[in-house]
Length: 318
Image 1 (tube, rainbow, N blue to C red):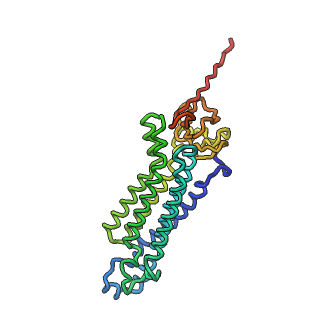
Image 2: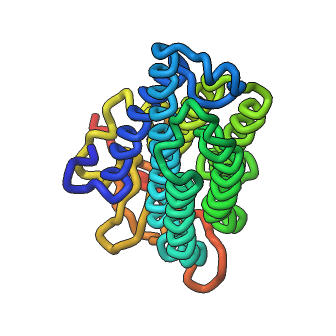
Image 3: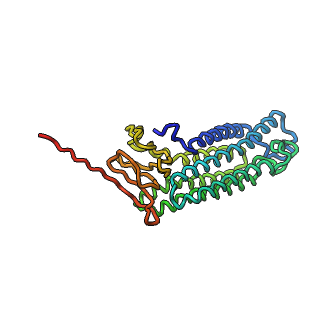
């Protein structure tokens, strides 16, 4: 198994994303039950009961906290994916894009935070009931949805594009390329979920709609971000206990930095116990009878497949 000592950056960051997701889910439940300070006429605001006003104030506060936790989770997952791609593309030309995209992710996250803090001043008007604080002082401010969606899609497109050159250059069958594309570029599904969320929010005025769709979108993002690491659990080798062999460095399918500082990750297994490994190094010790590597050739640009087959002949005595 991987072990605590072999954990990398994204292994430590992912629990933070789970904390954001848990907090956001709690806030979404409060909002769906309490409502917020939007979509009320002046007459209704003036005559609202104290109990309902208190409930809507609580919901508005939860909505604001939900915005911070929603973006916190999504942007934490983006950082996790970049840390994962840093190992997968180690030694390849795509690796040079990791750092600029990382800075873009951090800047876009700060843009969201500044927007939430500065869009309504004074800040407490985000949960003001009467008088009407205005369209900018409500958690359902359209500027929030448009801005967050825009920077979310732009950064996701950048992240999804990182492994594409590597996949296009890989000398693999088309069916396997498609499988790897779906595995490594599954962020496209998160982008679709983000667009659907904004569409449905603008079509429905109640506060429960954005809260529910935020949970759906972030759940898809969580599954997509962990898909490359969950993939080995769907193979027969996992359930036969072969991944627990300590002689295989990081053979459990998790990304790693190997001894020669080149990243690799097992993406697929076959019944013959062959391991298909993304790697920038052609050397990898494995006790499997057939091992296939996607490696970077030294004399050309691109990725080639190297298969090592060990044949042992057992002579029987009579």
